[in-house]
Image 1: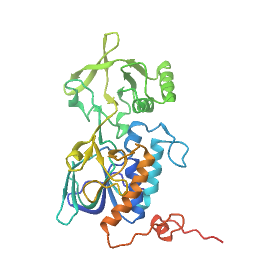
Image 2: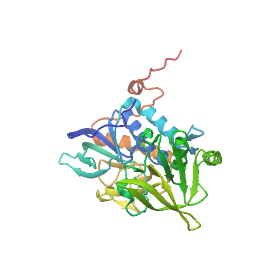
Image 3: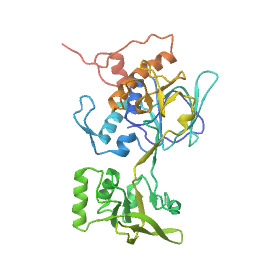
Image 4: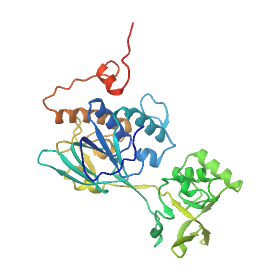
Length: 355
């Protein structure tokens, strides 16, 4: 299996390629580079692989992936991870690229927010519309409990078992975790600002059924304050549409208000931009800086369509362009995974024989 939790190293990691973004297009970029025998390290600001697909719609169906009539965002991510297993990429999650400096030899020094350092020949920006940061709860003073009792991600579900949990949000993540914790947590209360959800209908129906069976609760309202005992969050104040504020005791607060895309430090790399997107050509998907490519929703060009399948196409052409950039004296032959013994070896599969 792939190592999705690589630890930051204090020394410089030398590599041929660094991919910024671990969404579907970033993962497929690993595959296309792998076919050309280019190894890659992948950086993502999120703590999990999958980008928007996993964070925003893990269980929603996707219908426009070629030859796959329907799959969820999580299934697409899982399949891409399986596809790139032969290339053994290293993942550096929960960190953001904060610095890129071109060196005298043409390579790039890439530094992350965790001080992981790379010396790479090429960079592939597959960062979607930027790094995603959770939309935080706007209650003065409550941030002091973050990563203690207030969480925007679930890294270890067992931490919440046996606890009195309040979950805020009306999307898939909020519904999915509320349903997941029923029967495992001491109590589960779901809070949303209105009695309407942007989630899978089956999840909404199941939630309402559990509420009618008194297995969990749903409250319409917004958190407007809190109480603490010592240094512990003990209660939240929830104000409903009727203007009445109720107190709800709790042990843990999970907030799923969605993710806010931020371009972040990429805006300071000296790349030509147009409406907060990176301008590229349609032959190489190269930026204005040689050796840096942009694929997926982060880029723009005439006729650009923000589709996953478009990003896959861009990743393939960018990989070939990067190979030519890195090894200008080598002739690159287009080979097909169907018939090429060399690619079969790279992929770790047997070359078929035909009678």
